[in-house]
Length: 497
Image (cartoon, rainbow, N blue to C red; front, side):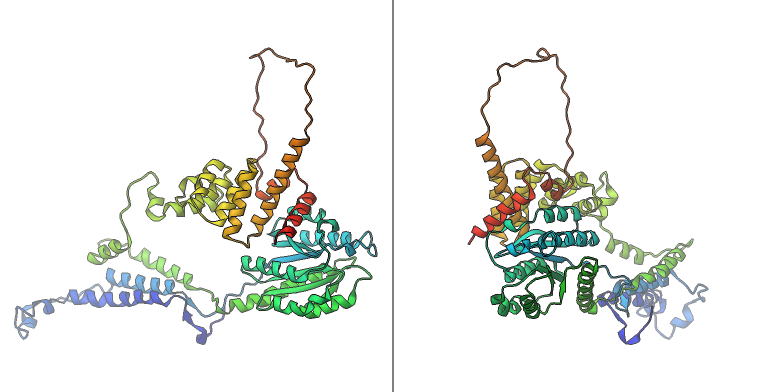
């Protein structure tokens, strides 16, 4: 730890007012102990020295002095003294990587065995496994761009959708990179962090190139272009890289392409993070807790009392709390704060019981699989997020019409809501599958019905099914395949104006 006097300052200087009070306390106490000052109005001043006997005080240290020291040190600690910027030794790449994969028909070319698209998908699976724990989003594009998954740190979920990608998922021809950039910018706005867009393609629409700088203006988005194939359109891709100020790489048979992607993504994040950290300083006030503890221990001495000073301090900081079963928690934490603690420790049923805020009560009940309580709580909240969760609950209960209405309400309140758009398409697809299965079900009557037990003689047994641990796992367990889901979702989105 290096000390630079020119950088020394306080992060919360308002707390220094408490130190001023602590410095004044001994003066106020000495003034209160001055008998001559109190008797001056009743006895002639020239007689006071001869009438008062003031023996010397053998105690130089009084409780008020320790209280003063506690207040001064506590104020200094709370004010946040600092002189060093907060630069951790290891900087984790928390920035999302947004992958945009070209699904135009040219990606089925077999100059890279078995095809360009298959080789790109294999590379993406390796990249996702390497980035395990980091947030990665997936976009596909041809003549239109579509979000497959918002940023997620679940490699299994990403892998299941990567495997389902094919060139027949998007019917609109072209290579709309401008729409990809717009999608990526919306994702970064939601993440509030710098990120990298990886464009994987074998060519580009050169008519779009002049407008791409406008789409990237004032954005923390870095673009990387990765060429796929041995005979790709090198001229168009070089022009695309120049138009987006992007490095241009190519797909390799070893891990060089993965190293290239991670190196540029990491460097971009570090540079952007350094700029954000210019105003972030390391708070070293916690070091003063040790002398504060030492002073507090020395304050416990036989025969010492603080009189009005202690009463005043305790009366100012402590408020009476009603006696309840959990009196200690209720004295210091509100019900919502207690619910938040339980939620962060994954005690979802307890959190749902503690929360008074209806939105957070609904979130906790939803995670606890108490969907009746969650639905009741979300009904009290008129926000896009609450409508989104109501839609999820209705889909779980196969009430697709109610789910569609809830997702549409969420999108009306928040048009840029990728998760609601994806789940709306899923609800529409599931509704169509259900109606189709119902219409095509054959009406076959049994020739004869036999029972192996007489009525009332059989045994019933409850069969428990495993609860999906997350919405992502639940989506994977649905009856429609990822490819069919994506095809219908993209078709519906292309039909929208």
